[in-house]
Length: 338
Image (cartoon, rainbow, N blue to C red; front, side):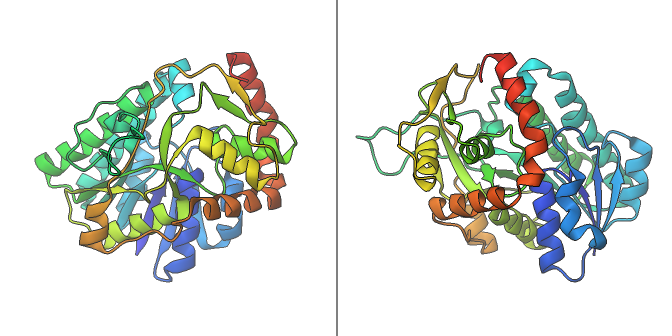
């Protein structure tokens, strides 16, 4: 199977490439990545001999057409994905997330190639926080939840999902979509919430928490996400959407306190910083369809276990993340959220 992975030098995409090389002997993998700030070819170093790497833009129609013509399946991870960055400058998000997806869809349409589109739960907007006195089961996102994006990032991802649905219906493209909750694990850029806290703690710096830290995210280890993607590629029905989640709801405050505990620090040893504009309250995924129809289940059902494994990876891979750390912290200081 010839697999084209867009954004394969980014966080989730690189882990997908590692997972594919490790578990699928029949796969011939090509990675297309523009190597913007979030993409790093060194994330592919351990599997470099097993993949073909092409540096380029998913909106480059000629390049994309050539690569898609030589593929059996396209897995589209490439995206601008940081909410803070989308608030500062939405234009790259429109170009990559919308124009890039359109370019890929036209190529897979021409060549009849199977396509899987990686999306996010953020397209659904947010949910109310759980009421501690309320029922044990609270509302979660499902495949039928209406889109209600909050930021330039999530709105462009929502738009890209709608493009995929239109190309399926109008042109018969063989495509599936997955919307996943927040990922964590190896090779995640230090601007993101968990690796920023982890690398601060490794350096003896107090973690930073937006506002009161009550915002809730549904965390999933990146390896579980990528195992689900392969299950959808193999057994999912073209034209359908599948939600990927591991029942990992945690408030940002609880995540920080769990990390402080892992590092042997006091539970209130962190700093509050100004909250982000348009900060969604809660995400929560109902992955019942994926589990019942396709038989997927997560490996990391204990969030603390997954966090400890992630902390271990960052401790052991200082050379990977440290070159990015100073520039990231300087950007946060400039934005007033340092």
